[in-house]
Image (cartoon, rainbow, N blue to C red; front, side):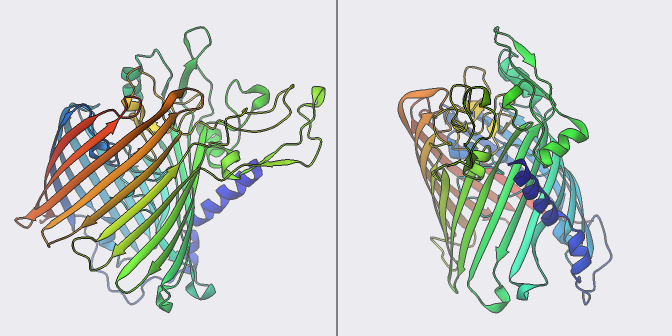
Length: 527
């Protein structure tokens, strides 16, 4: 399986590397770009937000906001940003973008937040970015979807170095019917002080953990040929590696696990390999590796557009390839491959969604429906073969959790879909996702009744079973709802008001209700 991982990773490198664009794409030779000015098109934005709740802040008042949220009953922030978008230099062969986004919060996990601080350079279509930046989800609606399962928008941005082909680039072959985009990134998590405070260093935590992500997307379609149908395929992969994870030592204490850092760790994160400390004969690969297979089918008519999509999450080979070798011997030959026998897993865990865009709609503009199933996780049986059990079934995947690391989270918020119960909800000081086996239904819709007024509504219903390791004693339910309206006035001002509710057991989100108001001023800095 590691050879397949290598092939997949190298393919993603080819997609993200801008060298192919430089060699094959002829930039806009007839364009007449103006002189580059780094102080031009500098956008400013000031936000003031306050949230008041009974219980915790309701789910859809705090989720999918890049981690800029709090569960406290009363919380607020003042936020200011200056950003020069890379799109300012769209007419040039090369461009420059940069930005800084600072937050003064109250009743948050931090007293001061650097939400974004980045600089980026583009040459033709290839972009090199350095720093923390909010990147959007791929192949999903940014404001109505419940969220991507791997590279979501629920947690604070991770500072990183990122090489990307951010927009679809049309291959100069096959009559321009094939387009590619993707990225490769390495960075470092910034939440170790929060982990110290949350766990009091009495349960599993980590320090100095490194980050890696890569993704590649293929689009088949040709807008110039007036074909309304297009298909998008994608693969997103991410990893936590290096650093100092502190785990239980079996005697009631914690010990630091040895990890792979430096260039070796980066290589084994990019091309999955190596092994974690203490795995012994069950050595797998180093770090916490995970990802998603993505697919979306689009139909673009004159007055409406429909998209149907799928997001299949995986934590290891069992759900990535849906196949495992299962021909080991018995007794002394329990580690020897004796026969050509394989086990095929079921394709049960999936996010399925549909998005309808009514292009000229006023009261209803966009509608999103999603169904999420995560109960299977390769099954409840076994995790590997043993001397006495020759069946090699890699079950109990335990989505978003990991034996050494604190799982797919940053500052207490899961980095994927927020319907996985984030560790920040836990009251026992343990950084783990306590409900990752669930079925959920999600609805989102919005509209723009007038030029100045818009709204959106989100509603989710969820049934949870906990985890395979710590299951709930019975099935629990939760309903989350939010209605939000926005009004634009005095040219540069926007006010938003939202009301949210949660109805569920304490094992899920509990009963919460809250109100949130946001005032925004934005414009262009003129020198």
